[in-house]
Amino acid sequence: MAFTLSDDMEKVVDELIARYPTAAAACIPVLHLCQEESGWVSPDIINYVSQRLGMSPSQVQGVVTFYTMYHQQEVAPNVVWVCRTLSCELRGAKTLQEHLERRLGCHAGETSKDGKVTLLKAECLASCGTGPMVQLNDAFYEDLDIAKMDKILDELGVARMPAEFRQKAPEPKPAPEPEPEEKAEDGGPQMPLPEAAASPKMPLPGASSSGEEE
Image (cartoon, rainbow, N blue to C red; front, side, top):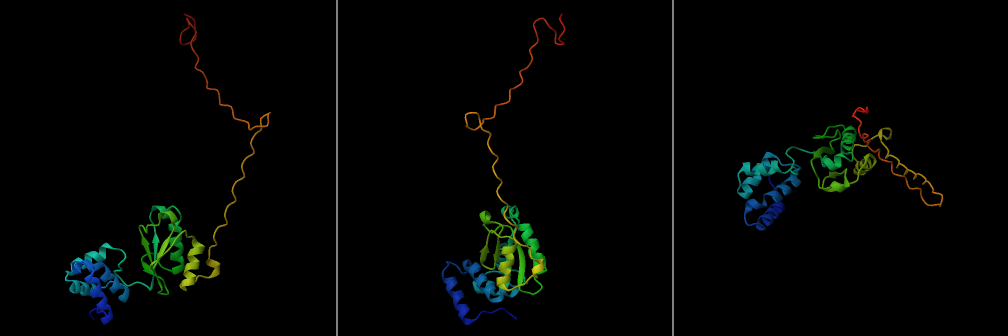
């Protein structure tokens, strides 16, 4: 069955096209509109957009495959992107992803057993200073750990995990106590003396390199 939009949504498409010098320039927002209606960009949507904007299907397909924000297969109502670029990776993104895979019962690129969450990996979500982070639908969640991620999914009401499998946030480690300073006789701090450098031995006049007199 060919993809179609309602009359109201068709008016929105007309408004989008009117904002640009050419109809083809509205390709990205029109694809977003269609994905919001269908949940993903199907081949039927590609054909619809190409006909609506006067483009070839290959041109529309090129846009869809270039941008990761367009889903090329069916996804769950909730999509979780785990940022795995270096900044997030150094702060525990892999551990976070592995925990999500255990909780959702699926690997990255798949959908949870209850059909409510699709788990994906992202190369960078432009939040390098607040990693590890995930994008849940259109919202960013930053400075995450396993406990915070579980709370987000609990509030969403998806894939509830039994309490015995939960991992609590680690207790903060106490700061180490500073070592006491040594006091000099006058009561001030004792300054360490620099180590004396070993001076090279100079041969005596008239002595050979072996140390015997000639």
